[in-house]
Length: 231
Image (cartoon, rainbow, N blue to C red):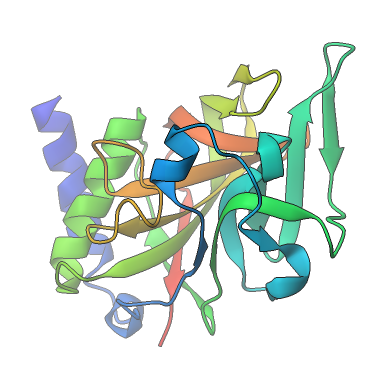
């Protein structure tokens, strides 16, 4: 594993040596809503309504609807609201009502997305996290970096989840095109709802079946395109 991660780090170092990545904006504002302590205590009441937030084509994000009724994933300003259906399938919506609400919502809208290069194959969430740890160091952004990201590529498989109520779901996706969106930061980890033990929170949009949710694990093919905020 250590050798594999060293190879991944070397690839990222080469990736970030390009002229394009020299223009990466290291600190990006996040429209952040929700309190981890309150959610842990079982309070899933609303903290923000959709009419209070602005979405554009550049917006990415993740969250959970009020009372955890839907898992929320946002890419290119499109909202994916997903929850298990009573018939064993899924309910998927893209039309949040203005008065609809979320208990947690993290939104980032860079002024522009910049292609930062292609990634080598990634075999786990740990490897993905390691790549971003190395990338942050090589960019020289400092520990206060807040880096929204997008990855477009092909997965061999992925484990994803809907942390919804009254019923949740853990899914195992097969090979298909996918987009991964998220935020990387070493600071404000509670506020940004980073995965415990990691410096990022990521969601996945599965283009083969139209589903989306919290990313738990993945095998990502070589050649996936990484996008970072441009200055």
